[in-house]
Each structure stands twice: as C-alpha cells, then as structure tokens.
Length: 260
Ligand code: IPD
Image (cartoon, rainbow, N blue to C red; front, side, top):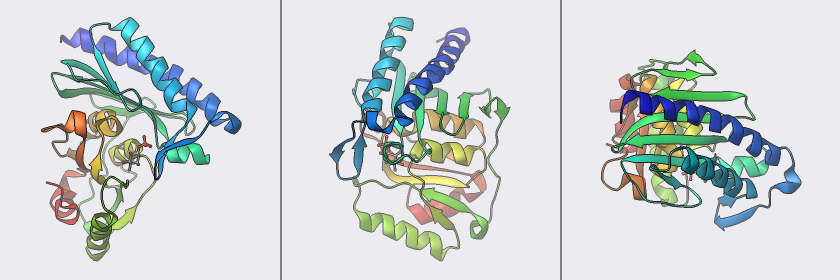
C-alpha cells in the first residue's frame, strides 16, 4: 500500500467516525431507544452496536471495495488491507448512561497496524494516529506521561468473564503490593488512549479482542507507549493479552501482569 493510499483511508476514517458518532449519540441520548440485550454475563448489546457497525461496513465497502472488515458484531476474516471495528467499545457504560464509551476504527496493512481513529462523542474527544506520524487528541499532539516510578503510577486493568476472576485478582494484588494504583473504567480502547495522553500510565488486560485494541494500539504507540506484540499468533482472530504503558514502566508492569 502506498503512503497516499493509506492517507486516503486515514481521512476517510476520520469522516466516518464523525458520522458514526452522530448516529451513536442519537441512541445514547434517547435511552428508550437502546434495546438492551445480553450476549452473556456482563456482555452487553444495544441496538446502537449493530446500527453503527452496519453503517461503517456499508460505507467502507463502498469506498474501499477491495478491503476486508472484521467487526465485533458481524465478524469477518483478515486480509492484507483490513479494517477492524468496534462500533461501541464500553457497551456496558453506554447502556448505563456512562459517557466513557467510544467508536473504534483500526486499519492494518499486511497485518501491521497503520491507522487508529477513536471517537468518544459523549466526551467530545477524537483520538487519531497514523504509523510514523504521531498521535493527536482533538488535533493536538499527545504523549505518554513518561512516569517511571511504579509507586506513582496508575494503571487500568481491563476485565471480562473470558478469564477466570482469580487471575485478575492476582494481578490486582501484585499491583497494589508494588505500590501502583489499579483502576477500571470499562472501555479497553479508551484505556489505551488515556495511556497515550498521560492520563494514566498503562492499560493491561489478560485477554482482549482485536476490535477493542486495533485503533488504540496505533494511537498509544505513536504517543510513545510500549505495546506488546498483540497481533502475534492468532491475535487478529482470537485476541491476546494486551500490555500498554510508558516504556520506563514496562519491566515492572510485565512482572505485575505476567504479560510478556
Ligand atoms: C469490552 C471493553 C472492556 C474490556 C473487555 C471488552 P465491549 O468491550 O473494552 O473494557 O475489558 O474485554 O470486551 O464489549 O464494551 O465492546
């Protein structure tokens, strides 16, 4: 893929994120329209998840018919030019009326993360990055905090029922024992973005899916974060552990989380 072809996709994704934000906000602001169902324990689904993904898929296939798409709700298979979408990340927050949710649009060329656009419209935030071109929040450059002292660090630990609770509890115990503050805000994508702009020092989760992190990985890496090799092995199709943090804290957080 040429730089011009990649840039075309970057600007297209920015525009689509703005339109998708409008669509998602319409549902968020009309709570009687959410049509909440559960895919499993603590696994929320709203009408907006399906509608936003459907919109993004329709527009991407019209704009870039050769590219393929993997989305949280509709699945899909990988190819050399691959969009990875989470229509609403932080669906539990969205369903509860908590504004910490976002739309995540990632793009990989030859399995390498190239573009990340994350829009959190209820918070008025748009994070954007292209590999090699830095990361921004609402157009302003962002950077990780650079913190190196674990006893001053706050890191977010994502959670789902895909991993036994005991394993999360062990990480939390090791984190507090090392002097770190451990938090959870309910959107893995925004957890990576918050690390990217220095609002926390890291984000970790023992298993997460590619649509939750594809865009955030580009944003965090471009903001100077250490990110593990998430797409190794079956990462695209089956997910992997994620560890993203300031480079200085990587050795300590690898030990705390057990994520290599
Ligand atoms: C979830 C969120 C959550 C993370 C889970 C994800 P969803 O995604 O990102 O923070 O801990 O692993 O499944 O269901 O809200 O799109």
